[in-house]
Image 1 (cartoon, helix red, strand yellow):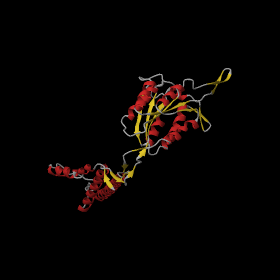
Image 2 (tube, rainbow, N blue to C red):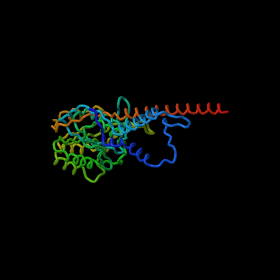
Image 3 (cartoon, rainbow, N blue to C red):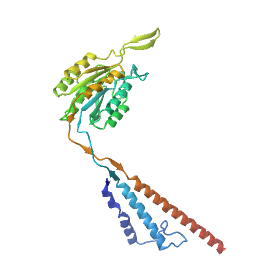
Image 4 (cartoon, rainbow, N blue to C red):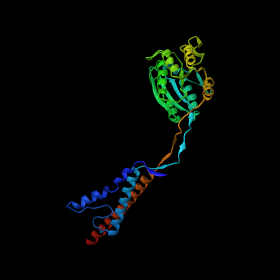
Length: 336
């Protein structure tokens, strides 16, 4: 179906007529030369002047139509009426840049691995609503619960380590997720928390936030990110160290236990992907049936036609001007 986004702009169509009447009422002190209608030394027929006015009117009407934004609205498409509500809380603290993960044989930092796996996870969540929280010194809502998976994945892709600080506010990340679920009546209320450290920042402790989450019926799945062993070069050769010494697994396990969730240890891509199977077993919740109608912008068609008509008018004017100039030259030569 063809429609206009801003049909009220069509009221501008008679605007040139109003200005034309005002100009005709004012006394003229001289001759007004219109492109294509009157040229020095050349008598233009009434027919040519009429054609020129028609082109100007055509250009004006096309420009107004383009400004009104013509749209092609498709048939209604029903959105899935069943799904899960998942809030992702992703750690952006400084330790997430430790390079102890591997993707396709290439060593990468922890956050790159999370981006790689979670982006695929988001893509698979058709029918689910997903939100995104980023936390470090404090927790920030990057995206509320939405079915626009592409936007959530883009927000995660654009996030950078250190964007919101260098410490780890796990308590705030949980509390913010619980707060967002308060606005949703029928929901699974699942919070997925990914971190590689322990709580050392924020205005609320993980224990307090977990207690509130349990009272509000929010299930928390915690994921501890980081390898067990990593080799590094020293003056005395290679040394094996534990890069996940700051990871408080007992705290993450307790958070998951108190809210009816599970704890996962993500030492590699395969372990991180285990969350897929667990989320898939959750029973979807029925929602109100929603639908949308896809829209396609069509403003560029009248805009292109207006540009084409303007070019034709300009070429006509240039051609007429050249003919007039040649006539003048020939008349001057004949006078001599």
